Amino acid sequence: MIGGMTDDPFALFERWLADAKAMEPNDPNAMAVATVGADGQPAVRMVLLKGHDQRGFVFYTNLESRKAGELMANPRAALLFHWKSLRRQVRIEGPVSGVTDAEADAYFATRARDSQLGAWASDQSRPLDARATFEARFAEVAERYRGGPVPRPPHWSGFRVVPERIEFWQDRPHRLHERRLFTRNGGNWHEGYLYP
Image (tube, rainbow, N blue to C red; front, side, top):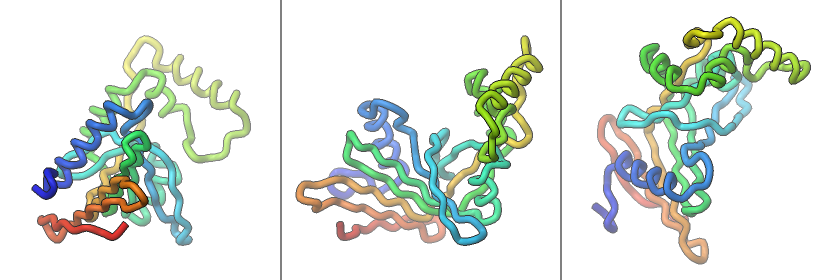
């Protein structure tokens, strides 16, 4: 323990996430995911963290989306949690792997029915001529699965970011912030500080 805080980055993340759930007005599990395209162009977007443990940080998406294509071509990502009410950030970087079908099925089953139907109706990230087109597709899918369960689409699954680097940033007066950096070397974590 350093300064009354754990030297385990996963335990520290769990504590900070619990604080965010108690303080943030909306989506304390929201995180930015940064990827890089084949042309070297970075892209970033907000998604929701749907699982985390010692293996990594999990989110779900359409596998035909831009982010999924970039992750499959270049399986590395950076994540950023920003909890404004707590004046904290967590930055995570590392390689990416797909979740298992069993994990994707289990999470998909917990989604609201309209979210399940939307996963079938949406060609995520591709051009849409009019909102009415999407709404018509949604209605068709709703009719197809009326009265029964909605299975997980084959083009919908999740990714796990396996952290090699986790930085915990805490606001301090006069911009004298605290930055704790954990880096993984093999199976071991090493801790240090960064200048603000």
